[in-house]
Length: 273
Length: 231
Image 1 (cartoon, rainbow over the protein chains, first blue to last red):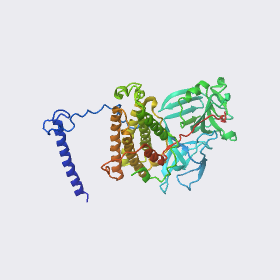
Image 2: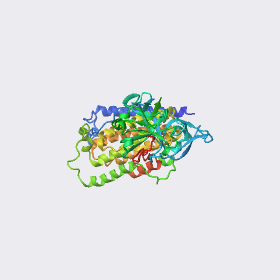
Image 3: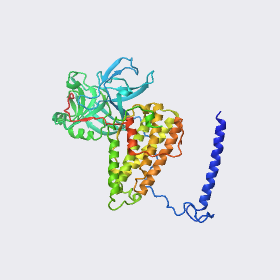
Image 4: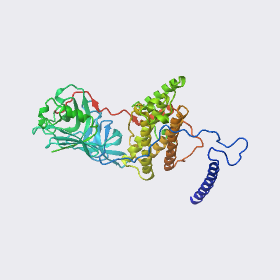
């Protein structure tokens, strides 16, 4: 069916190409804007006397392929309160619930881990959520989330070494000694993420700056605002490194200020024993 | 095909980040001032200046505003294709287009940011609402974006003061037109449907982009509230 049309198209394309080639050859023979080799009458050659092209104010460099890598993680804002389910379908059991705001009043975010379509063709996203038990993941409709943010950083806290390491594209760019939870109030282990940053609150106990994480204390469950684990400064730097906190990760003030310049919100956090 | 063809979203849902409004306001302001007054000292040859740190400072204010308007639209396209490539939900020709066009749009962003220097507008925050993860809406949106980008560049061409800036803008404009033809071919629409392409004004462009609700307020992840973490 399409062959005759294709043939006609090719034929006309060939004719057009030959004609265009002939015109260009004629133009080339004139030297572009020089004297024409053939007389075109009293009016002169077309284009004669016209200015050459302007030099562009800038040029666009050669495009580069996307450097997406295994070190990238995606987070998304929670647009509306929504139940989190064990599978990508409305009938799946509930595993939790996410709210659009954190207890600190910031936009709540979740880590986007995977995606799937349900039987109706609706898109679902598997997310890591700030809920007990720690390490909970579940599925929410894509429509309940906002735009995606991408980070290429990863934060690792080693409880036994009492060290925090920030990696960017897999390479360590910052290390610091930390204070971690006591045996009575241990820092939880597992996979979490950094979800907000608090500044200028004037409370020396937390130092000049605090990051909120999705990790929650498994012992202080009745703590105000849910017992979330923070990464913050301190007014007792001599206690660092050590097992000194109620589960939070404490850094010396100069260290938390340096970390704040390097650590984007949405960075995955791994706390290991 | 236009953005209206695939969305029934209300036009009164504003550009909540204000990025487009900012670009449009700046354009309006400079067009009033710029056409009435001669820029003191004249506009130096941009080609000679773009390699110096004072490149953007030497451009006419109205040209800076137009380049920032272009940059905002390039940010939109860059974010759209880059997110589509990252999500990996596309296959075949659409996936190839996202990869190739995304790289070109990122290069456009870099070029515009380089020439504007500190005067470059900030990158807005985008929420593509799943469109980058679904082949059919992706293709329809890409057609609309490329048609819009081409028409928007054309809409400002007559207001560009510097011939060198105009030469650069036209260099990008024709690339956008090639993208438009490519994605139209993939979408099954005529790659070059019309013998004459109309320009789009800033307001027409803004209205269409707002209708998508793709530019949103950046999530507020910082607060001054006193921490109540476990300590």
